[in-house]
Length: 450
Image 1 (cartoon, rainbow, N blue to C red):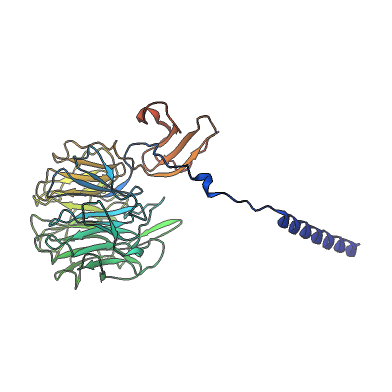
Image 2 (cartoon, rainbow, N blue to C red; image 1 turned 90 degrees about the vertical axis):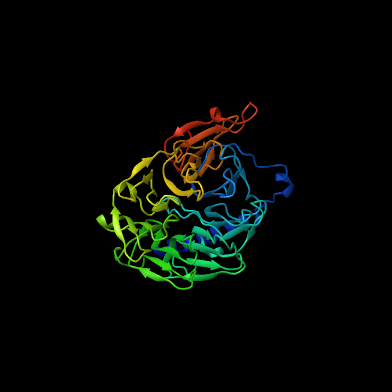
């Protein structure tokens, strides 16, 4: 009996294999004519509101001109204090996630953009492809290298010689990489030199230049990594470094700082070159805002309020007022402002939370542009009032889905801006806010319809 069963099993397997092979031979090859989709085109159905931004800047030559970078929509420009925005990177950039923007103070035509968002997230952090440069105020762009840096935190242009540029790169978040640290070019991006490097797991989270003496540069180095299940932030290899010779040599600053810490941001005061601030993530009460009054030789913890250091891997940004040495801003979920050198802080109201960057006009500190999870907003009165974010079609969607209604509806979950739905076509002259409706709160990554 066992022998008969074995023979039967072998026969069934042979028959099944032959049947499968025959079906595979008879399967028709599906071909799609390219002309089938020739008449299809993309159209923007909104919403016309801002999405996450971690990069922005203005011009010292023209108070009304600003640039912003979004985490998925490239670079945008406003020439009317943020009343309207126009995309200037489409057709030039290969990736759409912007990590840093800087405009030359000596030549307003030169704009340098570092790609790849620098605010690490547990959900998704998009990568970039290096550095792009424009020599005509954003009309045209050229890629200038550093493709494998993936996440660029800052771009600093020498105030007198725009061919000298520094880039702080975090590098790959998902594994060891040598393409991280501080990079420098002296020929406008034709060639790059890595001038500060710790190891394959330590990237540069922030860089600041003393604009009164551009040979002096400070850099924050961050030991960190990501896996599909966690973010690791901090270690003995994180540190604050200083160069006094234009980035050729660096020393690690230690006195008064924790021996081990995580992500940090750094800013040297333009109003007082000896004054340097760093906001850093450390164990327990060691986290907080540190201050040096002697160019980084010694540091003192001046404020460790929790509101300034929550979710450190996502924030940790500090900006010294360029005209008032007593004023310093720390960016976190809210924007926090101190007028007494960091001893105390008060919340500065902004149109949206989760703040990642602040540019303050060096010649007029009333003028600022703030990047946050709702886009960018501009103030000309030190934050008493801000421009709208409802004019930037840069909202970041995790995923979208369509239903089977007629007309069909499209649904999507936005990063920190709720989940929404809209008909695929409206009957008016355009798409406005009244055409969108909420389907879920906060930032739903997945949506499904019945």
